Length: 229
Image 1 (spheres, one colour):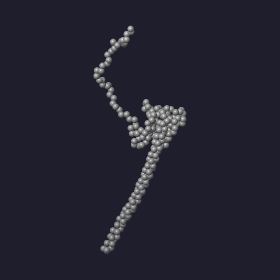
Image 2 (cartoon, one colour; image 1 turned 135 degrees about the vertical axis):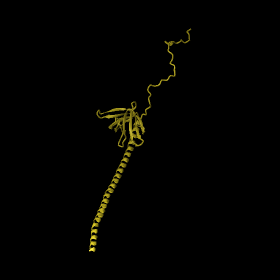
Image 3 (cartoon, one colour; image 1 turned 180 degrees about the vertical axis):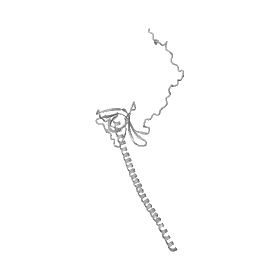
Image 4 (cartoon, helix red, strand yellow; image 1 turned 45 degrees about the vertical axis):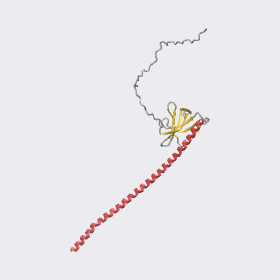
């Protein structure tokens, strides 16, 4: 009969295997001590309105073609103090800025022809450190995200347009008030020389009356001489 006992397994080198490393509890101090550094993104004073994943393209006029700027999250950020809204997009891995521009009242977003997941718009972009007129195209994973982006952009643009008109009216009113104030100051300045002129006339009159006094003294002296004679 065949034996039912399992054969013993032997591995080559098991007898000569080194013992496992033991934890001695020794602590080695690092050669260079690194301090924590506060990293700022420039978004600390802004509240996010929209945050969607997408891929951005810009139109190259020289090559007459679309060029990819990168994929990442596109954000609409509203400043806590000024209330201005800007569009910011960074690449997902390198965090390099793909787009960075304000959303003005004149900005319009249109659906890209032939693709419901994409839309296009013009803007003065500052992603490269200087203002450039760019034509952007952005593509989303779904039609719903594209519509959400377009609707939010249009709403923000309209609200920014109303604020710009209010600021313009306020500046025009301030300019009118400033003109009125300047006019009042000029009228006061014009009246002051007249007062000075009248004062000079009075002074001159007083001086003339003083000139008559010697004549009166001479006549009185003559009268005294006649009385003596």
